[in-house]
Length: 503
Ligand code: NAD
Image: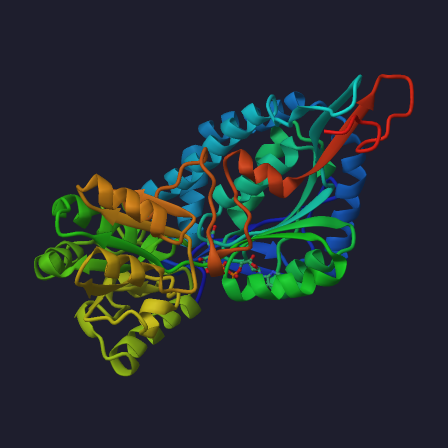
């Protein structure tokens, strides 16, 4: 299809220089709401660019780690200030490159700003412990040390928030960075690098190599001088990265997929639960790792709630996210849209669930040039059906009816993932039991499965990750090593566990 505009030529930033060429050629990034709109042409990097970027980051690390943490943090705070001014501009580009509606891309940018200010404060904390020592005239403490060069591999659905979750704390902790953004959203990542440079970051401390996952991502993962890989993306790729990194023994932090559920109990405020379900399932066109893809309804309210849900969802306006009236944007690309359609087929034919709403590609009129799909609801879904087990990552909601609270919790937990979860109830005892018994990294009470804030840990259990948590101060566990320090000021050799009187 012919381009309607002259595409902008973007560059990689490697070793302190912007470079237009990539050893793997170039690739295009198009607007999923109108594929004739080419957002940019990007250099496709390869192993050579990764080697160069890692060498530069390694060189920069020698000096950056010695800059006091509060000074490093000032640069991140300034980056936040620049993002505040550039918020509209960043959000417009983001909507063009990945489709979600402007209100949401503003929210994504705001999350980056929040992360900047939160992390800047961490530059004056980064607490360790001081502890009493068992021997006299001896002092003990633990301090966080940077780990070196951090490789970051990011997905397309939160093109600003997710890179900032990784890059800002890594830099404040004294590390340097090589970023490999998703091929669907490199423009927002390039903008982030520009912002960091404008904020005063030493140029070689940040490098961006755009290009394919199997080439650029893999070269980063295998590189012996990269100490940590911080990856957010699909469970499949996360497993591959873990295997590829194993021989280097580097730390791998994984934030992976989800199959999140919202429970609605018979005593819930149904209007509130409805707003939560619609926002959780169809916000970001269902393309959030925390999206509500299963709705678990108590049988007493199920019939009425499904009616309300279908009526409300019918009214959602699907279209170009740059249009202020639109509530649901396109799916990110053709293959993802085809994947959603494939799951609707599975729901109908293999699972034999009931299609209560939607189920079709939208490709006429205003939708003719983009990758649109109707908001879709399946009812009569059984917990082990594929549409209730596998991450679809699109606007498809599977509704399951249960007889009581215990069954609701059992069904919610019956999945390979464990990222986000939600329960709507007015019963405080039930709410606390749910908090205790749900197997997930995040539980909301009377709120949808989406809406994390940066000051609390973010991540999940089971197939959603490997035990790390981003955001909060817990993210520092990914980007630092603990060092234990013993200072003996007795002036003589004191032997731990030996030169102590018997207890
Ligand atoms: P993806 O796994 O296809 O790609 C993620 C990144 O990995 C991209 O930059 C890609 O180029 C790169 N990549 C692909 N193959 C690679 C390889 N072999 N080696 C190294 N890098 C490789 O995921 P996506 O489609 O971009 O994002 C959607 C997925 O991300 C969903 O599963 C979603 O649940 C997950 N996600 C998780 C979180 C979370 O925090 N848990 C947040 C957002 C998205």
